[in-house]
Image (tube, rainbow, N blue to C red; front, side, top):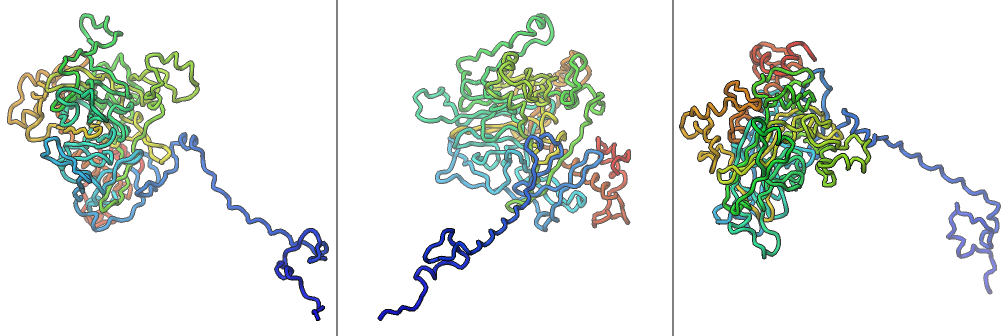
Amino acid sequence: MADTSTSPAPMQGLVLDGYTPAIPSPLNPHASSRTPAPAPMPLPREQREKKDSLKKRESNPNGSASASSLGKRKANAAHAYPSPQRFNVPPPKPSDFDPPKDDIMVSHEPYPLEMPDGDRQLYKPIELAENKRGYRYGRAIADPLFPHKQFYRSTSPPPHYARLSFEDADRWMHFTTNALITTNEKGWRMVRSNVCAREGTTYFEIKIHRGVPPEGPEPDAQGPQPHVRFGFARREAPLDAPVGFDGYSYGITDLRFETMHRSRPSKPFHPKKTKGKGAKALAGAAPLPVQLSPQDQHIKEGDIIGLELQLPSLTLHQKIVSGVYNPAVDIGDGFDQPSYFLEPGTEPPDTIRDRIPVAYKGNSYFEVLDHVASKPMEVYADRQTPLSNLAAALTNQATASKDVVKAPPGPNHEHASLRTLPHSAMRVYKNGVLIGTAFENLLAFLPPASAPSKTMGAREGFDDGIIGYFPAVSCFFGGVAEVNFGDGREGFWAPPKHLVATPTVKAAHGLQPSGEMAGQAIGVDASGEKKGWNPGRVCRGVGERYKEQIAEDVVWDIVDEVDFFMQDGGEVESGVVAGSNVPAAPPAVVLGAGRGARGVKEEEGVGM
């Protein structure tokens, strides 16, 4: 007999206690009488941090700093006078006081990259901090003589001479061990040297080892062929592009022997007359291009190309970027004007280096927020910007933007990045023979013409001492080139005559300066007046800048140490610097080391 006792339905035991259907059913006859459980309150949302827009951050000169890939930037308070920033960094380790390690170079795999004659092999540097867009790196070392400067100062690994920079190169560039020969197996890549030209006339040479064949380009060649470009480039020029790609570099191409700037080819030309008969009639005419001979239509393997860069003095340069340049008054190249004389409105020359020491791969580096391309320069380099007819182009675009280029570059342009340098030029030689002038009126580079990114928290308007035009080389699909900066034992390969007569070249060969050399340096001022001998007008090898840059680094490291010493109180106890075990410097050294713009203001009691 079946059991007639009441038992729960089979599905009823699976119903959760807190679950009640909306409609009654035989399994839940009292559903409508149950009160539904109240819904839980939603969790309160965390208040989001309100961030400024990109436009607002760019317009704020004191924007917040962002952390880099190697170190966090947190500087101390600002000062009343220009002074470098000190960052919160850990104390140096014992290994940081060791001399800089040699760069590690590995062979190319699976097949080594060799010179065309197979005599030398090219290697790839590894485990180093490479310059990238927005950041720049230089070797540093801890020194107990710089306690107030957080112990770190500038240094460099061997080889110690003017050469191609491993840090300032694209990661695909390969070099010989002497860092004077370079190549690249991929598309256009670039490398800059470790020296830069800032004023005066400098010269260097390029020898093509692999590029256009001696018999000329191969019309039936299959696939990309090796090529080389070279010239001068600023720090803003990208390393993954050839020389002459944008407005920050000026280059020469091996194919068709063309000049390249803003990716627009041209030809070397004869400079226009600046004085004499017929100069007025030719003032508005275009310069005459050079008619190359049949054997000079291309730069071929084995050719030696010399590049000469002429720049005005930094005094005149500072007037231009400060906006006080007057062409009716400033008619010379500026080398006859004392460097200590400042025009009203001109910013005083000073060197401020905001650098943070960081450790990377067992080495110490100084990390710097590097210069970036400005908006007016990007508009200037754009292919859709016709400089020859800007008036018609402005009618087709919004003129309300502050970055609109309303006029071609000039010394009094409204945008500092598009101001040009009078009495500046770049001349090109082939096998010791002058071909012509490649460029005139090069763009200015001193701040504010060059500026770091505001969004990264960098300070604008400061010259760190290594702003200028760097010799640069670009290689394409196996092109091989060798540089010669003139500081080797054999000197230049095919120097022009006016370079051979310089005092430095004479001294290198054990000769005495000739009277012709002295006469050449006198009276070459653009104003036509002879005001005496001036070394700024003598052409010299760019390799001489290496020792000058080392001396400048030493001087400014000492000035920075004295600056921070005064900020920390400047007290000396029993011949020992307060807070350290380092003997104190004599008072004359402390007061006289920084007699630039900062030293004068410190002696006047500003910011103390």
